[in-house]
Amino acid sequence: MKFKYTSQTKTGEIHNGIIDAVDKFAAAKQVHELGETPLFLKPIDEQTFLAKMSHLSFGSIKLREKIIFTRNLSGMLQAGLSLSRSLIILEKQSTNVTYKDILKSLSESISKGSSLSDGMKKFPNVFSTLFVAMIGAGEESGSLPKSLGEVGASLQKSYDLNKKIKGALMYPGVIFSAMILIGVLMLMFVVPTLTKTFKDVGASLPASTRFIIWLSDTVSHNIGLVVLFFAGIVAVFYFLGKIEKTKIMLDYIVLKLPVISNLIKETNSARTARTLSSLLSSGVNMSRALDITKDVLQNYQYKKTIEKAIFDLEKGLPLSSVFKEKIDLYPIMMGEMMEVGEETGNLAAMLVDIASFYEGEVDAKTKDLSTIIEPVLMIFIGAAVGFFAVSMLTPMYSVLENIK
Image 1 (cartoon, rainbow, N blue to C red):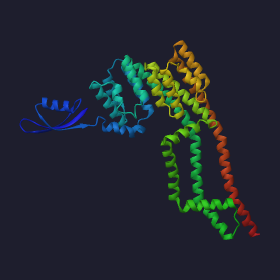
Image 2 (tube, helix red, strand yellow; image 1 turned 30 degrees about the horizontal axis):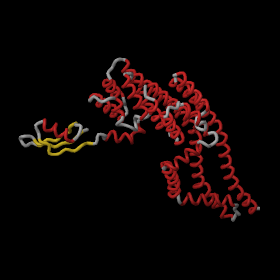
Image 3 (tube, helix red, strand yellow; image 1 turned 135 degrees about the vertical axis):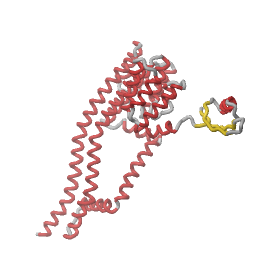
Image 4 (cartoon, rainbow, N blue to C red; image 1 turned 120 degrees about the vertical axis):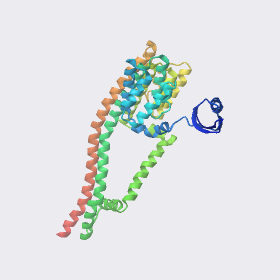
């Protein structure tokens, strides 16, 4: 670790500096060896400001950049360039300031004798546990270029899977947001004009019209409070999601929702198989691979299943036994194919096939989901427009009758 020190020379001069040492006593010894007397020693946090900021800068380092990084680094190493030289070249090529600094830090760690995986551990929100474990396994086996290629392939599959899911949810999200915006604008500018007309002619108002007028008055006169109300709802859901008991309950509920539940199950099946296959192919032992896979999965129910798999594995049971048992979370085919992979001694390859199959299923289902969502949205929009139209047109008939 690093120590900041102040020392005095034999001539009485005061020096300030930074020194690397195992502990405070070793640091003091090194200062003595320089012919100086240490006056002050203070350890500097090994986690640099850059490393701390990596928690905040994750959003600025896109997954796509990491995919390109792994592929380029793998290609350079296969071409015969040294690791340090390859990192320096990638640093010069990068246009992302944060990533340039991270690459510089990795290059400096390598030049000091550290491994690439150790350097990556300083940036946990940039390089995941899966990423670091696969790189570490590649370093230990002497096949770092191959491991980098596998990391890149794994990240690419994850990127494609997330993109498909987000793409399926983007359309309804945009439509719903546009509806809310249009609704608020109508309540603020259109409804007050009609309300004034109704009051002037003394039209009798049905309950639905009175409700819309009340909503319009509330939004028009308390827009700040309305914004705070919705912000508060978002904040409540956000913090509830952070509470373990609430998160467990939500994770259980989403697995019971129609249509969505199957998509979630197949997505988690694909991620489980893809992560395990990548780790096992890189040389990571089964127990460690399962532990990392547990961290990759987000749903509590799946995490508990992987924990049980680790426990059963330690008791000598085959890995497939847990997946065959948990058919409410994993499809029956997954456990059966894993059992075949174990029996043939080709589990990693079988897991790749499983991952590819369920990634294809997720792709098909996200397309189907978009097809299902569109008519449901049309019905919802039609109902909302119809309710508004009937509520505002009914008093107009009353106005016309009064005119006659």
